[in-house]
Length: 493
Image (tube, rainbow, N blue to C red; front, side, top):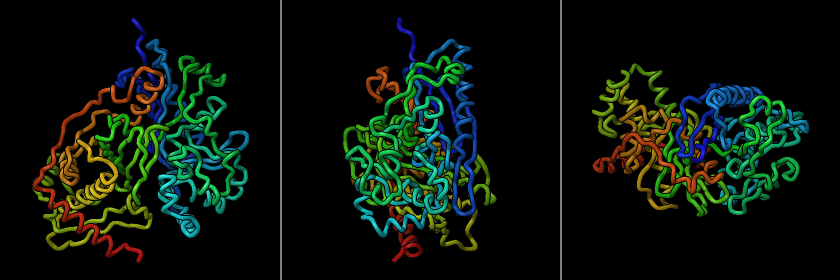
């Protein structure tokens, strides 16, 4: 009888680092879970940064804990998978030392550089080629900002790399990256599967010498440097695959690996995505297209205001908690509060991509209750997903169902019902606790031949919320009201 196959999975997210173990069916082995939480450093001018060496130390701490369990259980994984946050990067010197912090996805200091690029490039054509909207989220504007505001560090930089590459550089001496990771940078040509010469012509970097070679993409490292080989003998000599983007991994781990199932993730922020295996897509204005790998585009939109809206309401309003609050929400019809909300507490990404947007609550009267404001705000987030959903189905077939993950949404039965009603599609609750970690592990299991196809691994679910057809017209009207309010306040014309 062949020995069971396991894959270790390292997950570096925006608020924690985890190391886990999965079997060949994609089932998490609970005894092996290690986690360290952290907070990115935020500055008053919109900066969001992470110290690369501090994050590396957290990853090493988690791998120490995982390895101790592997020793205890006499287990040797077949490979190591890796999920990491998309879009962020740092500079390193020729000696492999950081010259800059990791400049985070949510760093908005490069707004002026976005406008500089907007005046010089064909924004629509660049979006078509790269799949990325011209925005502070991506590399181009951030690189220009660093050259202007951190000139000494910029000049000292030998290479520009993602954190996943940095971890491989420190553990193996050789950086590794993936098609998935570079596809979310804003400097990658999705159709040509290479760096985009059009946008690079406006950036002060040399792609030949300062970016990871395309020949190295998706290739694993195997031989740890001596100190780490001695430290983790059960992880040495196995393939360590480069990091995939966390959003792509979330799709895979929640079972959304074909075009008939959309992934809906609502954590602090939120996203809706679909994987289109073997099929290219040019995203409509306002949405994006990245990749899981060279053969799998992932298409959709991300919003900056998801569970944080619910959290702000609970913190700021005198609301009941738990089941009492759920009952109050359930007793209300959509729009019955008479309010229109633009939930832009943290600016917005899809489809507007404007960091300057701020939240608006319109229609309040002396009769407005705190629960009215909450209900309207939760509906408003559902409406943002409704708009993205409509844009997505114009490019793909309508999905059979939507798979939901993220504790912010799934903790509230009534908010999940609002989502189902707003989308007019069934919402299936994903019961996989660590979808991104699991997705990376499934991709590696397929790579090493333990899975024939990603879809062979069953995904655990915890129920289906059916849409109520009678609510469809109400959500149509609410979306029109929201769009009218947006036009009245925020249109640039």
